[in-house]
Image 1 (cartoon, rainbow, N blue to C red):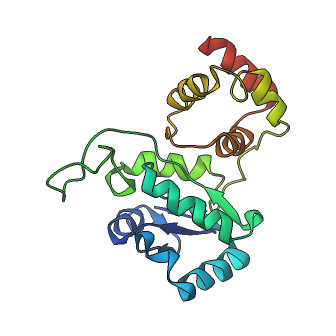
Image 2: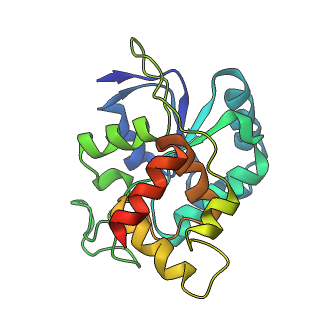
Length: 196
């Protein structure tokens, strides 16, 4: 079990149950789209984010991104980190059929995948130095690499997301944030050369 300083927000109780077996950290729920009508819960999330930081850890489907984007717009960005699970086809054990998009959610991830996602998000793990965070990747770099603003940008972004095991629904800005967490500018250019 890893101890993390930040609180983690997930969509529902099954996600919370899965994480609580892997992570020693406060885990809060949005009750799915319920967060959009629950002002008290949103106020609590803001307070927790300001006090200790908040990691948004929603599913990689469209609904998960709607919730993530709502929270991104409602909470100051300097208090947020974003953990993204990979797009993995399948269904959770408790369900009789896969979800609408046929992808596993947070609750269906293995402990190792969850830990890797939290570390990539920049979670503060007790007893460890913070991960080196690359700096300097800009929107202009994204444009120069063909990841935004060009006719094939979407396809190139999807190929990069797949190679990095990140969800296909991730926006250009979300990808830029993750790239700056994980890579230096030189490392990104080398990675794109390999993908060519």
